Amino acid sequence: MKLVFWLAVAVLFFYGAYSAMMAGWSYFQINDVVEQAAREKQGGKQDERVRQVREDIVKGAARSGLVIDEQAVDVQPSDRGLAVKVRWTYPVIVYNNETILSIPLSVDRAFAR
Image: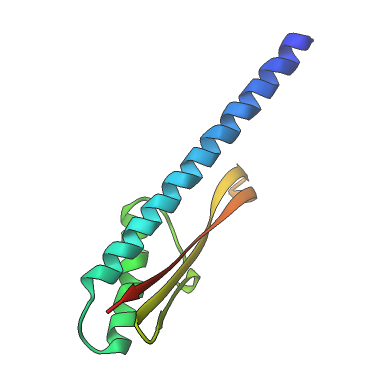
């Protein structure tokens, strides 16, 4: 009985560590996508730049294998350039295509012109 208990504890520990690493990987992927999208769109009209950066973030996340809702991407013009906020969750436990437990993540960056 002790062996079964400790095996279950070990499995939970390693699954938790795996989930934390994958959530970290998704954070760094989205951070790279945000930085690339904002750096590529340096010139042009502010409204067009905001729309294009938002679209590039959503498309870049999809290319990385992460699905992010467009409403979770907030791109605002600021005095010095752009302010970008992206919020998403990394699912840890999914049952019947419904997320039971997820890790909330966000990237909040500002980019100069």
